[in-house]
Image (cartoon, helix red, strand yellow):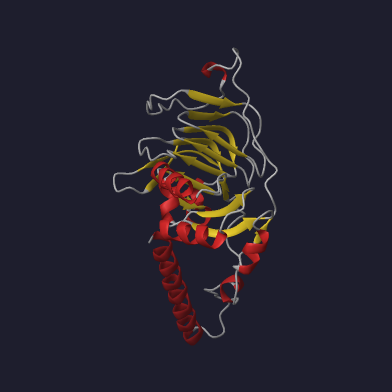
Length: 273
């Protein structure tokens, strides 16, 4: 897996630095040259940024209906099969142990349960209890004056024709909010805060700063792209292929970029400046 490969490369890089530091110490014991930083010598180091988490809401007590709906969701959202971390949220009393087992078999990673009717069962299963989600975001529909010609842009980049309608959001997307453009491209005119999440079945265009998550091609379309005027994202994903902040090369931070899937099915980030 990519994460394992990245972790292995990090260990190899660190081992090489330690070896070089030892060589320099032998040859230049009185020198001020330092190969390793203090952060690298600490036993623990906190990496990354705060990421929002998807919530899987249970709306039925019928086991068969739940399994059938989960099958449909995994077909439409390939990331579910790739260890997507979720929080279970429910107002229905279900057998939580059974549901967690079904999710794990599917590939979904359960990291907690929203406080509510399932709290007692969650505690018995040693699952963390999360605060309930009280945030609901409804993007305002575009007015007649909100046309493509009013969108500020410095680059003439042609987006792929997805054949989908476009949804436009004029308000800033704040931490904890989630916006989903179902069967549509998504245009966001304002900034996207850290802890916010954009999801679209088509392309995503962000004309402010992206500090949260952007997930395009949520139903598996590999031809969509993400365009961002100022890129500082926590996570980006296209058709289930994702990259977290620690994996994103620093030269793209704060820049205008487009993100697409390459021929070898990896995320490719390109500068628009």
